[in-house]
Length: 524
Image (cartoon, rainbow, N blue to C red; front, side):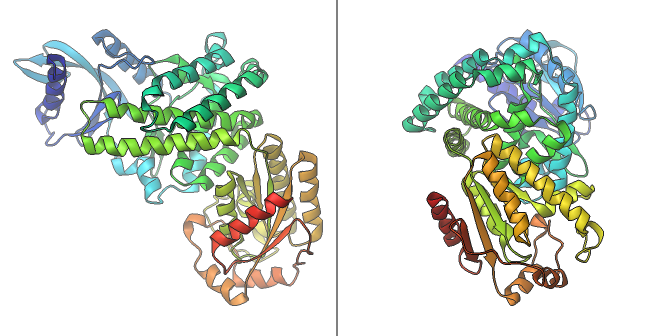
């Protein structure tokens, strides 16, 4: 180990001493990424940039670290002014380091309010603590941030197909050494061929987005590790080091959060996030580039996670974990690349409350990377009711009147057309009581030019009663009671047998049902 490496490690050990932070600090914990060390003291967090050069960022000089600390403070105060406090010099005096002390300046750090690590959205996702209300707030906050974000000629150049190609070229060059380690040779080649073809053939899409003003100075790193969720939502850690990554199409920003929610197995939240962002921003055009940017974002996460394998300061067990995580990101990127070449499909779920319709719909949406449009959710969105809040109105009363029902189905049809025409598969999830509503869906599919499959779910009343009583809050959109179920059953017209209909007794294993639906889709 050379002298420089010893010096860096020595500084880190010194900054783990409570005396570096003044009175009242008794314990210091360290969190690190491939670019930074973050020292947690209980009340405050201090972020110090590593003296590294990855090509896309260069923190190797003291002046650069000072400049980028100040930039990070300036940019992040737009979203979280109550968290970011000041930039402090790290000084050396009598062989000791101090944040904000007197003496020779050896580095700089960013001082922030420390929020509980348990409130980081990633941790909450692992525990099922992220609610649809949190996602709604994130979507609203980011839509507003994008609306006021810097734009113009200097910014829009970063959304050109040339810069996008440059970003991908850099990705491929920097991941060559990880082939066979965190990404397979086959996946590397397949992703490379697919994205290069997409960029070449869809130049007009990138040009249109630039000309329409959708390339803006964004957050640049919008994923769950950079969000705190609790009584309030705090979004932090904007990219400050390279405008090539912070200046982008807003579609790329949205794709990052969508990809991250997918990564953690919450496609339901990802779908809802897109729905709400579109409501707040009205930027329907982003849908045509969403899968492309999801592929990009997953690949970048695989790349930067792979960098940890070369970091001398990271223990071997942490490197092993990073290797597994990077592989997962690259597999996700590969899946998105394949989506760019697939044709959209429409699956329409039909069935009474409690028949397992929505549970099966979520599994189908996961399997086919589809948007799950749920009438119970859309109804509450239209009525301004938090989707996780129950309104146990009787059928035909409250938010379940005939008028609201018509609005709900009309909006669901509109969203389905929007997603399908942009190239995305859709799972529509509603009761569809009568044939007229099912005929309307056929019209949607015909006009979008996509294949359609109806899935009719059913089970005995006794099974329904048990399910209705066991509804889980995490998926608590439906407000149906057994009284509502019986009232709807009396008016329900079962679908007639047809080539594009699959009947599913939901008492059978879900995996078997999904397999049957997959086979049926291949036939139509």
